[in-house]
Structures are given as structure tokens and as C-alpha cells.
Image (cartoon, rainbow, N blue to C red; front, side, top):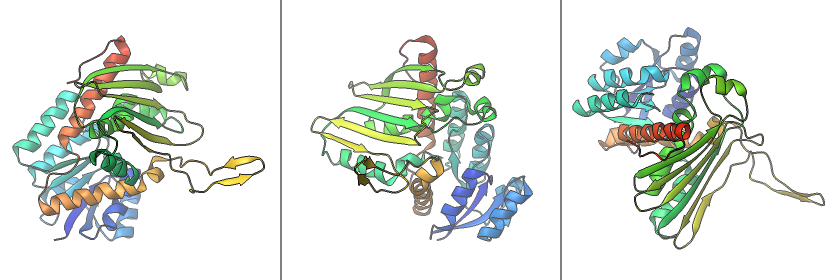
Length: 330
């Protein structure tokens, strides 16, 4: 069976997913929906797919699944529409910026028996997957402490910050998902501290650019997350997991994995400096996992419930940062 997929949105992430679909043997990019004619035409010509409207895709018998890459405020409505139309749905995070709306959307998908996978690509990074396999194998014993470092080279445009939902819903939400994945149990307590250190305009927009979060589970296992919108040395993405028998870590990725030694010292190439280059393999991996789950009638590995729980943690972190109090999520 070849899964016939339509992509909604031909922006940066839509282009990434189009490339991933085109490279997946069990899938075919059948259509693109995009209001900007030139962007739609570029994908259609490159991958040989049709240009259709969202209405046409929803009604089409020759489309099995959709990948939603549209602005966040359209996600919930589109998820519900295509779930009701009988299409499997892959959607970029989050389901919605509002927890109540996200809950209603996921309930609708469940009511119609739909398939929904959320785009948390970090779970599909080869190094992070190897780290998770090491934990699951019991090599480091019981997980006791996790440190997640996620630092962007620079802040996004002010217009994006204005509509992103803030650093916890937009940036840290990936770390919340990874934390739940690695902890293996739900978070019961959230503490957070956040400030603006890189650009006063971010404060004027009601957001933060620097944050630290501590997540604690019922068993006492802890996860510390550190975020910043300014890492002058590149895209800093690291994980360290400490267990009762040892530790496992995933290091940063450089433009080339070499090291030069001279009389002046040891030198390495710079870090990768953009999320689309750092997570190229992860984006391909998550689309392959979506295709496999739909084709085989299995539950996708990152569900709407995962997206909801990560959003609830984001809400709890925001409240904790504003009040200075520990918050129970949910």
C-alpha cells in the first residue's frame, strides 16, 4: 500500500516534510495546498504533485492522510475537519495554544476514531533514540536526574514571538515532550524561573527569552530544562541522564565531526546553527514513523494526548515563572 499524502502549507516546515514524504518508499506526495501561488508551484513542480484547495483535499477520495504545516491558530480546526473526513492527520505542534481547545480537538478525534500524530521530531533524532534505548535496556539503572539543554542561536522575529504563545508553548514544549519520554512517568510538580536577557522588546511583547524549569515526578525523579534564545556559538542541543548505575549523554552536533590539534590547542568546527539542519534525520524519521503507523493500523508514536500533556506542562511552567510557586500540571 502506498499512502497518498497531502501537505497543507508550503512554508519552511512544509518544504521539509515534502522532502521527507518524497523519500519515503511507502508514501507519495499527492497534493499541496498553499495560498501563495509561487510556493505551491515550487513544491508541485519539484515533487510532481497536484495543487489543490483545502476543501478539495478534504473531499478527495485519492488522499489518505494530511500533514498540517499551517499557522498554529488553524491547527485544531483542521485536525477536526480532516479527522471527520476520514484522513489520518500529522500536525505540527501544538494542537492549539489554549489547553481547553486542544482537549476538545483531541476528544473529537477520539470520537470519530481518527488517527492523529503530533510533530515532536526530537524523539526521532538518531542520537536521542540511542540514548532512550540505553535507558530502556537498564544499562544505567533507574533514572534519577535528567538535564536537557536547548539553546537557540538567536531569537525569532518579533512578529513571530507576538503570535507564538511564548517561549514555554513554542520552544520548551519540545523539551517537555522529551522529558516525559525519557522519565517514563508523568510530572507532578513544575518549578520555573524566566527572564529577559537578550532583547527588551521581548519583554514588551509579554514573553521571556531565558528560562530554567525543574520537573519532578511522584517518585522524586527530576528533570532540569535550560533554555535561551541566544547562544552565540550555535544551536545547543544536549541531553544527560543520570541513573543509579551510571549515566548516558547525547552531545552537540558540529558541521563536521573532526578535531584539529596544533601547538595552539584543539579546535573543532562550529555547531550546526539551525533547527532544520540539526534535525534533518529526525524530521525524516518522524514522517517515516507516521507512514508506518497509518499503513500498519498502529497507534502513532507521538499522539494528540502527548501534545496535550506537553501543553499542560507549558501552562504550568508559565504560571510557575509568573508566580514563583511550584505548580501541579493539568
